[in-house]
Length: 360
Image 1 (spheres, rainbow, N blue to C red):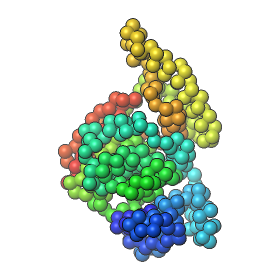
Image 2 (cartoon, rainbow, N blue to C red; image 1 turned 30 degrees about the vertical axis):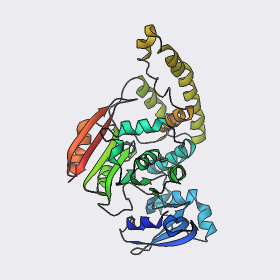
Image 3 (spheres, rainbow, N blue to C red; image 1 turned 90 degrees about the vertical axis):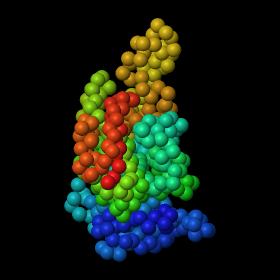
């Protein structure tokens, strides 16, 4: 964590300012200092938020038990006591399943590939690479940090927020980029000062929340007046691929992650052998090209195999998935007073929506 993050971080529970205590620091120069381990203490409610592996962990009280689950060694190493767990914390609900699912997923399938830059530029249309230079941006649900990587490459200073332990992969993937900062926190209770960011985007995240419209409204608070809010959200889906996915999810959302990993390996192998390889071969022949284009599972044929596995895991593991119409997405923006709203249907891989607006 770079100490300058204190300029925008606040306590997510009471919105008070924070004080920093450093345990382990890397970098001889003040401007290059990176706090690897430490804590942030709220001046208002006196809650402590750990800094672990260079990442401030700003989870709300209701999810603190998951932090202790993953990082009990940190608390033992410094002789710290975890906050008292409540009965609510002991309950393993969909939100915690989502946290654990993405924690496993993005620390298993967390490598950035060249294909992802084309994906990012396609997700954010009509925004282009030249939009980012000189701006401060928020990635709401940054996962393993692939979009952060490209947004920072285009010249933005980026803050990535994620609920899960995917922040570990995001930090690793962007560790040597001084214009990228990673924070673990909840979209419903982001630990930031309002009206801070020049833009915010959330790509492939809101539709996995318990209440997507509330998640959108929460993120919108942190965009400056005149700033841009962008979201990519699932649209209505149908066809063979979706029918198979819906059927499998009845079982896979309750599976052990290692067992699901094996299942995803088998599914990905089947797609490669029986769909991707035939498509790559026969789509080059004039008399079979038209037929091949109608194959329902041809997507990802040009992606690395591990990326195909990661996407399969993503579809089958996360417990909550919502689908929206364009009018519904448009209402999200209208209800929080955005103008110049642009909703664009996207068909690549599956139907979805690109949506952006300007904050009044």
